[in-house]
Length: 251
Ligand code: PGA
Image 1 (cartoon, rainbow, N blue to C red):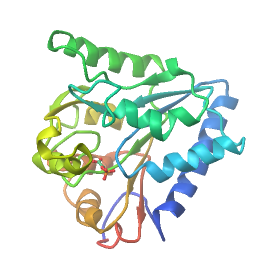
Image 2 (cartoon, protein in one colour; image 1 turned 135 degrees about the vertical axis):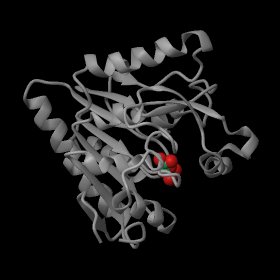
Image 3 (tube, protein in one colour; image 1 turned 30 degrees about the horizontal axis):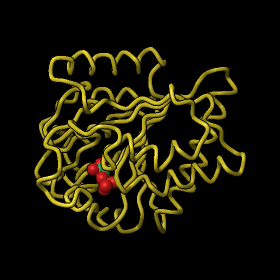
Image 4 (cartoon, rainbow, N blue to C red; image 1 turned 180 degrees about the horizontal axis):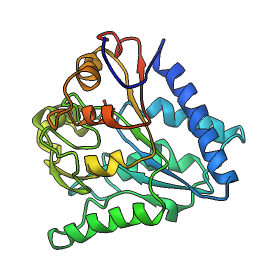
């Protein structure tokens, strides 16, 4: 095993998420105590669900407030309005924002309905908003079977920024069940770039289950390459992988 990044392997995903949620709550508290708003980069998919459940639990216990938290989501499907149940805006509302005290104006998610003519300006405005907020303090990531972080599929350059991306066939296949069929899955998305993600001051990548073990191993121990965008994390000064036993089995 030659991985260079810190890796924390837990008995199960709930253990991992309890630990990470306590760490993120402490980080938010420390940043708020210093007089700043905390800036979180957030992810969607099945992976972060137990993490969001834990944040909600901490909020309900009175141990965590989002009143001085600003968020930026990684990505959104092109063509899906926020009311579509598979849109990432709807996901975030359902799984986190609808249950905590975050001011609506503090939430940022790319707009999947933006027209072709405004797309470039929309992506630039997203980058500008992250910068204006002071940059991302903590970025949450999952990993796709293609090795993507955000929707940065194989071939995404290390310095890529928020932009229109095409979804890999593997990624579309993985999304097909929740869309009720492959033909319903959008072919494009708007995604933060690898460069956008790598500028976050602290990063946690989560992965659960044996289906992720191979790509986790490749990202951690393989070459740093745009064919596996998660491999770029090897060069980040404060990125940690949080794994369950199955996802860490290949290490
Ligand atoms: P998943 O997706 O959490 O649904 O496995 C992860 C990803 O594609 O980044």
